Length: 327
Ligand SMILES: NC(=O)c1ccc[n+]([C@@H]2O[C@H](COP(=O)([O-])OP(=O)(O)OC[C@H]3O[C@@H](n4cnc5c(N)ncnc54)[C@H](O)[C@@H]3O)[C@@H](O)[C@H]2O)c1
Image 1: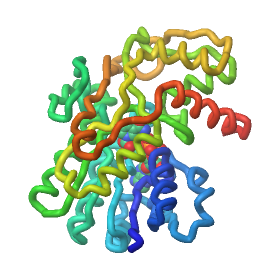
Image 2: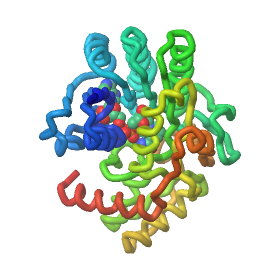
Image 3: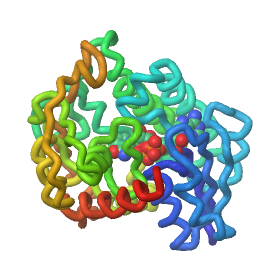
Image 4: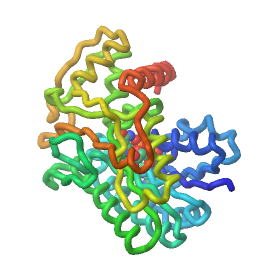
């Protein structure tokens, strides 16, 4: 039987790749997106596929959400206010989208008893410094006066709500916490580090590294992230729990910038910029983010296939095309 899958935020970076993958295996895909940080250009190559429906609209619209959830067999909820810069520029709208919007999606899933995958983030671990991070580790969030924590907080609240719905309302909910997912179609516009560094290298501009550059991250290729989501959504036994979705190679942002220079062959210099000059006076960043993906592996068999050099090379190839098209 053909599955109909609703992807909220499906015109975004992760959603567009997921839609492509579901369509390839024969599912029908409904995408709801308001194109705030995504764009229909990410999915226009799929428009000739009659199994795809694109609905321009918002998860805040209860009538639309209800109709679409009622039509589909499974819901992948990716729509959210995303990106440090976007959150700082649109603080209230971001909180409402991520909390009220998610509640509306959850309510519709409850009404129609439809299973849901919810996208969360490694940002919920906040200022934790130990590694690797396990799903039941403490979330150490900063003060409410530091606006960037609203994203982590809103996603943590989404997780609480989703787990409560799973427990009390008897429909399956699975939560994935993404750690810096990268690849083609990720926009540099809203504070995502890799496409920004790659654009700077390709344009022979200084690569701007924030703070002292010693903060570390692990990156996940979009193809691995799509594989992880697919394994989790195919396995209803995985529901009712939270899973880290991430890669293995921990790297400082300074070393990442150097790697980007090597792979692009750019002669750009690296320039350190204080956070206060880029964001706000009281901006705080996470020092370290390394996932323990043992739970995901035990439940689904997942292991990431793409190393960091491939991730960078794929982003370079994509950004070359976009830059030459003026995007
Ligand atoms: N990419 C990452 O590294 C990463 C890391 C952690 C968590 N996540 C989570 O994964 C999900 C997808 O992120 P992404 O990287 O693809 O970002 P993205 O910005 O490319 O995708 C988000 C999509 O949601 C849409 N959207 C926003 N508000 C909406 C609304 N009210 N109604 C309908 N659509 C709306 C946007 O237009 C966009 O297409 C998000 O929930 C994000 O929090 C991503």
